Image (cartoon, rainbow, N blue to C red; front, side):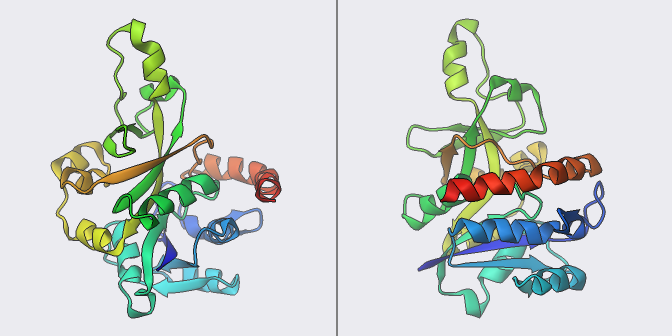
Length: 257
């Protein structure tokens, strides 16, 4: 069974209004994310999921497939699930959720998360990047601790693993991982995830992935040496992305050869 990548997109962002339609190197951000994922050749199909006609029009003009979804979803995961469970997508066994505001996401993160699921190792997959311990003091950056078998033990905004004794700083550095927000699911695991009620740990940390983890669903973590993707949430982020995009894509194409 094949792999389906779904890119959820909505216009409700407060810090960067109409974010999916803001221009990145001359094209809407959501189109750039679709182009980036399509060029990775990690999926059998890539679709955009939205509840807004203007987003649908923009991506369809660019040649992307778009699926209109409900405007009542509380998360991108729910929007992805609505698409995945449509009759025309029933042949895909691995579903991948790539956020619509991360055009710089690495191919290793996307393919790694997908492979953890398509190989049968885990019902859920995600990714993380090896990072400097400097990230531990930044709550906006999500950290993950991983077991020896590649399974996520916990995700947190707090500094994990916590360094109690400075003599152990080398061990901490080896295990400092920054989470990358890409998710892969089997159809059954995705169905179970969206059927679960919010968990107190999820609400405390504001991290949705703690919902299935707390329920006992194993989440595999693909660890990559790629730099963590920079999401676009503010006007400053968008300006920085526009300054970097052309050189980033030139490097991505070169590395793919």
